[in-house]
Image (tube, rainbow, N blue to C red; front, side):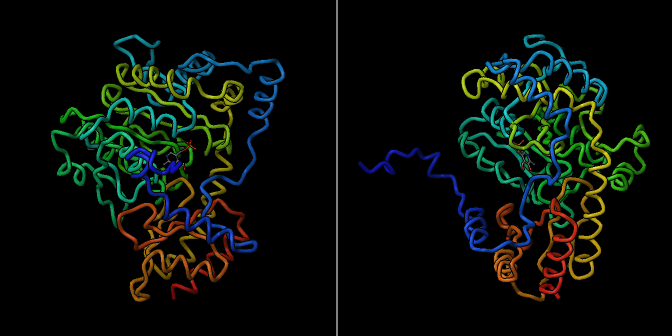
Length: 400
Ligand SMILES: Cc1ncc(COP(=O)(O)O)c(C=O)c1O
């Protein structure tokens, strides 16, 4: 039987060739300097590990409610009240935003796309983008309209406004972003929120890296903004603005912040109609996020990752010092990526430069994997400083 013929148009429309080539070439290297990895290189904090182990040992291994383990829903509700000032209510409450615990941030993205987008609908995404965004839209039969954010990687209201049509259901942005690490300022968040509110469009905020904000960037990102508390190391969010809960679907995750990407845990909150639909979709797809691991992350909001995150700021500085001298880079405000331009004098695409890096035993990702353009490379600095320094020197030498 030719099972290829059985594939849906949806499956045929998925293209993973770009990233697959990175993995294939990477597999041919012996002990490469790997600057391609999208996960932190620190261990999960002990309180989280111990809570997960205890949950398994005490038989908390069955399904949780579709919405999530009640204790984690409550703790997340409290966190959102403290952080963004939202008062979340139970599912079905028509006036307050609802919280949902999801199978990774990806789970929240999938459920939100399924809940909002149908055939012919449009969602505006940044370019460069996190790889899943366009593919998820395709899965829903919808169109991901690219908002070009070069060269500063800011998805501003000014750039988004001309792209809104009567088919636009949502605007999706990510701050600090993957692949550039750039965050929006409070004013830029306010402008984007106002635009979406005035057009009746959902603003989906992918804030998976919300806690991954560098201290100096935080100050810089908030410069001139009112109400940004000193010492608050989170990047500006549209969710902190008054009345935002009617327009913003806030999506966050535990994986990157606490080094537990394999636990597959995220959360979201937002308008009750939208999150209510997502809970229904969860019931018939994921059912729930992994229960004992939900118990594991209960301690997350009380665990200070600040020192670990600030250690990453030093690595960001290494990237800026070494590569800033030879090419153009938007300084990352958070996350652990830099999106680096391949100098024009080399006359190479991002993919060609990536191949040159492979020859030097350094793995990065060609910018074309994250963009309709192929002019940059993404590097991750979630790598121990000695190896990072070695990789950066090799890349700088290639760029000179
Ligand atoms: C911007 C962004 N959103 C979502 C995800 C998915 O994260 P998770 O592992 O929590 O599903 C990632 C992972 O790299 C990401 O970079």
